[in-house]
Each structure stands twice: as C-alpha cells, then as structure tokens.
Amino acid sequence: MAVSKKQVGVIVAGVAIVAIVGGVIAGVVANQPTGADAAAGDKTQNASAEKILPVVTHDEVPEAIAALKASGFTPVEPGKLTVATSVYLPPLGYQPEGSKEPAGTEPNFGKLIADGLGLEYNPKVVAWADWPLGIQSGKYDLITSNVTVTEERKELYDFASYRNDLLGFYVKKDSKISSITEPKDISGLKIIVGSGTNQESVLLEWNKELEAAGEKPAELVYYDDNAAGVLAIQSGRADATLGPNATAAWSAKETGDTKLVGTLSGGWPLTAQIAAGTKKGNGLIEPVNIVLNKLIEDGTYDKLLKEWGLESEGIQKSEINPPGLPKS
Image 1 (tube, rainbow, N blue to C red):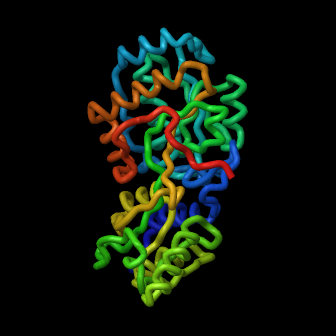
Image 2 (image 1 turned 135 degrees about the vertical axis):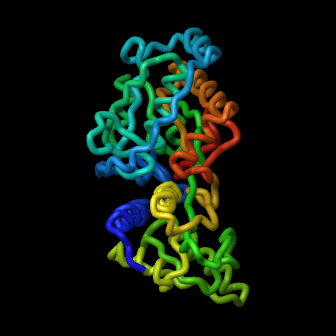
Image 3 (image 1 turned 180 degrees about the vertical axis):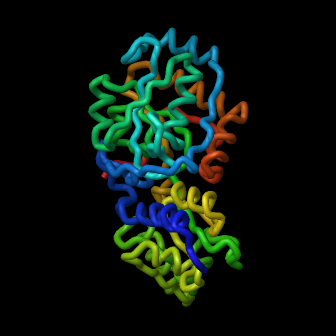
C-alpha cells in the first residue's frame, strides 16, 4: 500500500517517539521524564494548518474561583494563569504554523483550567528540562505537559490528575486482530517495538511467560528507518506496534490506517497518571482539581479527549497527588 507524505510524517513522528522513551518502569528521578512524559523533549514539531483542531473552552467554575480566593494563592501575573508547556509532537503539544500559541491536549488542558478559574490563559512554551525550576522559582503557576506523577516529584510539587499514562497496541485498520491485552494475545505475532524501551521490556517479559507455558513467543521487529516500519504494518510484514498511545492514537485519527487493539499502563506493571503540577503547598492544586472534576462531570473532558483522539486515556475522577511511580 502506498503511503502518503502526510501519513509517513505523522506516523514516523509517532513511531520515533518510541525510541525516546526509556526503559524505566519504577526507577525514576525527580525532574526527569518517565513513562509517556519521556516524550517531552526539546524538539519542536511544527504541524501544518490542517492539524489545528478547535480548542475546547469552558465557562468559569464558581466553586473553583471561591476556592482559589480562599487559598491565598497569588498568580505570577495578576489576573492570569501562567502555564508552562512543551512543544514536541501532536497531539500532546506542538506549535502550529502561523499560530502564536501552542496547540495540543496539554495546552488545551491548561486553557480549560484557566477558564474555570476565571483567569486569563497565559501559556509559556518551555524546554522539558526547564519546567521544574520554573515551577519551583515561581516563574510559572502550573505545568500541563504530559507529566507523569512519581513519588519523588510529589515531594516538590502538588498534582491533579487528568489522563492515564498509556502504551498502545496498534494494528492495520482491516487486521483480524481485535484485542491484545495479555501474553497469549501476542503469541506468534510480529510486533514492531523500539529497542531499549519500556515497551520492549514488556514484550520480553510476556515472551518469557509464553515460553514457560510452552507457547510460541512473539517476534520483536526493530526498524532504524521508521518509514519502513510504517510500510511493514501496511504491507502485512508486521502485525502490530507497541508504543506510547497518545502519538499512535493521533496517527490513527489522522490517517485512518491503523486501529487500537489494547493498552497498557506507561508504568507497567504499575499504573501511572498524567497530571497538572504546581509548587507544593501554594494552594493552587485544590482549585485546579475542582475545575478538572467539573470538566469530567459536564462532558467537556470527554469532548476534549475525543477532539484529540485520546478517549482511551480518560479517567473517571481527578485526584490530588494520586499514587505515583515509586522512587528508585
């Protein structure tokens, strides 16, 4: 099957991110990305105008505004919520051509939180490595940039969760494979995965279980040329891919050539959540949590995830400082 330039560009970006994500499962260091948030590098991904989706907005949330006033929190800039975010790959965060503001799920969450708090949204594009000090020093009020909650980070920051951190199995749209959720489902399949990644570690563990049970393991397939991997899926020379769900979901939404058949936690075998973060103890996280739960309650949250193709990463309730990946 021929692959268009648009398809290659979008899917290659999604597959390339697999190589960026390290093999860390539980060993995390504060201020370093882990799980899906390891995708938040310094590389900027310019998306074409056709990829600019409508930004979901919201009215003020009175109870959140009241909580904000009672908290004693003072924004960096009066009347504004200064939100740090990184631009790297759609759909998480990117800089659309001709746009002065970042787009993607993470800036969109920042915008919705500002709306709910009755503050002007003031986005600041920052390199991934710079947000921790920026939040600590008071340069930014909030971070919404695919940050995975860890126990070490919780010592310095307060978090309000808004997405599950997921890996996704994707197959060709017309594939007969309908579900991959456990080791037996990959028996005998050819699966594209990044070398040295957490995703590879998962598949290797699953293969051990299959071999111990006398079953045929999956064949892991590696491509230095990501475009070749895309073509391998479309031509049937590989059965599935395993990588960060967000970028693969965007590819599936944009091209219509692949489909999701299973997800795993980004911290497998542990669970992990993506959250908005602020300086610990500054009083902001409770109002933010109120806004997020209001978005979930009234359907705005589901609308946002649908816009960006991330319905599979939805949560039922935003939690303040949920359990994080453990310290190393």
